Image 1: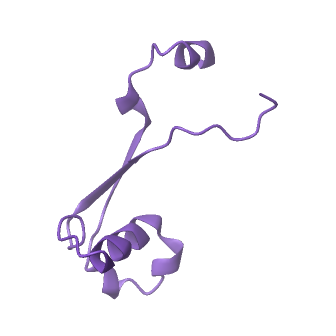
Image 2: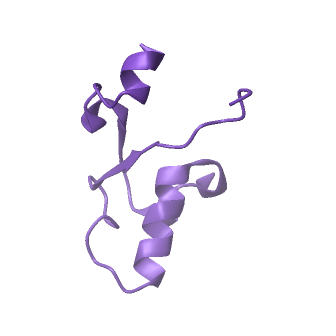
Image 3: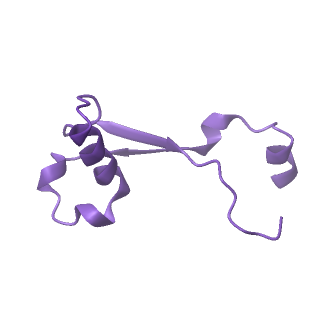
Length: 70
C-alpha cells in the first residue's frame, strides 16, 4: 500500500476525514479537545458562514508524513 501511495496510485479522496457538528460550536463543553469544533470556531471568527453551524460537516485531508525514517 505504501508504494502505491508514494506512486500516486491511491486517490486523494481515500485520505479525507469528515466530522459533523452535532450542535453549535459554542455548545461543546470540551471544544479544545475536538479539532472540528476548533475549525468551526476559527472559521466563524474569520467571518465565514459555511461550516460553522450545527449539522455542518467539516472535512480535512491528511497529507503529511510523520517521521518514519524517510
